[in-house]
Image (cartoon, rainbow over all chains, first blue to last red; front, side, top):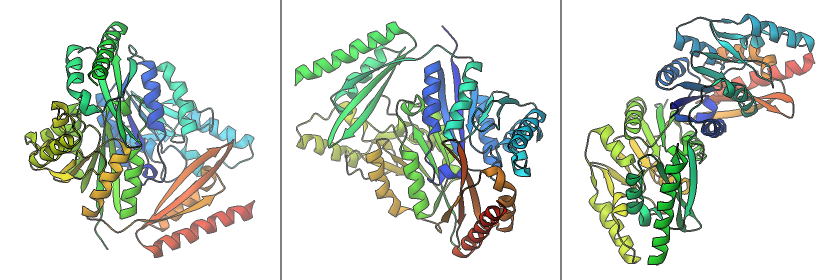
Length: 246
Length: 246
């Protein structure tokens, strides 16, 4: 059996915590991790605060195989992610020569001033490697097991596409969804028995409420098709029994 | 000046981390907290894992005035929030007499069996108080500064409406948004100067990218209208200057 590979995510930004911007990156990372067999175990959202960012990065990078951050890598005063990550790793944050040259050339070619603000985007913790940004040029970076990316969804997604092929991935967690027309209270006891009898699967029960009626989506997950199929058959038998009982 | 009141949020659920369900509660809580003058400082998302939930609750409840959790309070085996919160507070998790009686009566009136699974929904840490659930009956609960609520958005929102009037609230953080037609790299230096000159405001810069062009939304926040207006005037003057420079 393949090893288990885990991930933590850190979303950085006052705008998410104030409600002004609704995050769209958590769901995307979750989907991508599931697709490649990496278990996303924890997500944190913190404010634009150097200590809060550094503390969260240090907690997550010790605990999980990979950490992914979004937000705070632009040119303005509230973009403090690079400094915060440098602080977390105990290294200086300096102009990266390659990023600086790339940005300088880019703005020169467009007749735009290479302002102090724009130069900020070339700052990285010493020892970081670039993560290419095909949309707005300014690179993200990787240091240790931490991948630092943009918060703008289109740019985050493009950067993540460049990161995914560099990751070790695990055995993909297979899943199957079974629609259950009964509410959780009706199935809970029997479903718990099925979970106990199928310890290599993870059976999730998701209550749904719409237009005054309750039903349940049951999701069975396993790293093996065989155990997945066995548990699915038991869940379907349970639903058939309930239907027969009327 | 009113006191600063802070909040942390804990989202509980494998389904969010797998990407299967896209969270809609974080944005709603963020909006509501902003509306009543409570600063949401941190959000964590953890799996259906008792230790992970208890550790996160303990970290958040020590740090912030209030903690709000969503998810894991239903009747199935994967609903372990009540046990996890009890563990965090070091108290037993038992049937709550009032919740038990309420649920028993509810199912009897509908001719539905009060199953072991449904009885699970009456379990709470000893010392907890109910949070009413006008939609699906099973109450959430409050213990200490921690408010435990449902994960289904409609039910979470209804419970939160019952909680909000019980909270101490702070001076509302006022905000104003200024549309800036220039990218962050153009404004970054001057904007940083404006932030330095207006220390009682928080100026956020949010890069926007659409259809190949970059612009910026600038959000100025302050607890005082006067300082807010002063900073806004400086930001607008900056944009006018840039326009004049062509």
